[in-house]
Amino acid sequence: MRARLRTRVRRLPARFDHPPEEERAAVDLVIKQMETFANEWPPKA
Image 1 (tube, one colour):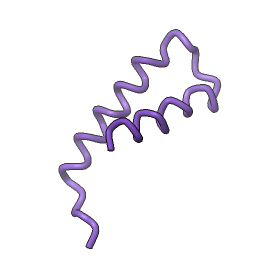
Image 2 (cartoon, helix red, strand yellow):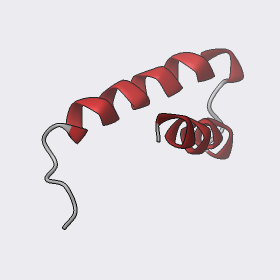
Image 3 (cartoon, helix red, strand yellow):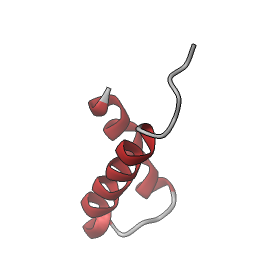
Image 4 (tube, one colour):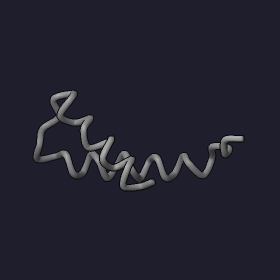
């Protein structure tokens, strides 16, 4: 699941004209935030 999310998140910086040299840090930050919030979201029924 993490690999699929990372692939989808990697597309976002290019889509919104984010500088390529900061892409990795941005992707890591988004993944970290998603993992944090995933603990708070209830599972789907």
